[in-house]
Image 1 (cartoon, rainbow, N blue to C red):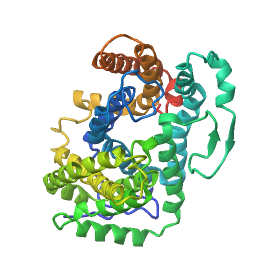
Image 2 (cartoon, rainbow, N blue to C red):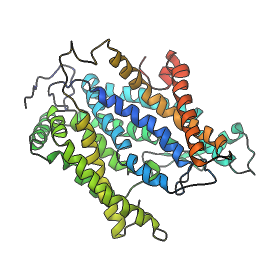
Image 3 (cartoon, rainbow, N blue to C red):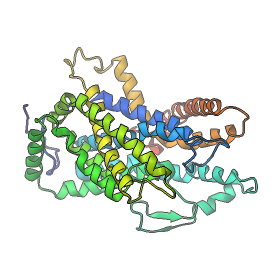
Image 4 (cartoon, rainbow, N blue to C red):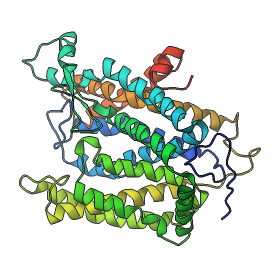
Length: 412
């Protein structure tokens, strides 16, 4: 494995300087798959027996929990991991101060804009599901924004009886992680960070060593617990995934290790899942049982396996998707190619579509759950219409003007 340690003039003092890694288009594709998958996931919650979603179908099923388990174990962790990778590259280009400003613009602006405009919609529709509730949306808004500050649930410091960040909890966490990272990068000395990176890159040359980061995730999930409201992971587990992404971005050796051990990671992850998921379901069926937080041996063991499974599956997915690039002149995603244009479109759409999708899903579900139709038909309609409207809203209402691009965190 060769490394190039020449440091560009714009690099931050605390950021090591290995050879620049080519942009990995599969990461853009994964982000898009996760965000599109959230339309399917949140539509399924309408029919889930356990989850307290905004709109509920009269008839529900337990099957959604099992199917959702196949996705939640890796989907949102993947978004945080990819965000960590992107943050490393942004820090190298902009430095800590420029990175913080860029994160505030790309994440803070859409967070504030969406909170003021569309985030109250699902909460209002939840109340509208009660036939006795007749308050208009405009009358509801002052109650939604009746808030106070509290540090008890950091970083969700704005609290209120009806106020929520909704599905934008991801944006809140990512913005908080980024703003905490920027000063640390500024203050930490460069040489120890580079030395640590080199030690880690050397360590993963041993077969299976790339799977060891599963241990902290497993212990954290077992002892701290999981947060159901955050797609089944603790916010501090997401911080670990974010930091892991930062580390992965620093050296190509980590990607070599994931590619080498992808099949091992997939097999181990599948085995852990097949053991852990039944344990999780059994813990959930216990009287008053809550496998997300209970301190029973069964619940702790299930969460331990869950945490380890998450990292194994990320390694497997990234390792199996990773392919060595050809020469730039012959690469299928070279500048100007059709594939590159598609990836560019999808990459830019990820955050706006994430912001838009849940209010649309809830609005469509609110109208569909009253139909006299089988659950499968209702689900298919909610998914199809919500996905169409989400993509349409992005393409027609967001990406075509400078103002709307800015409000949804897109590059101009």
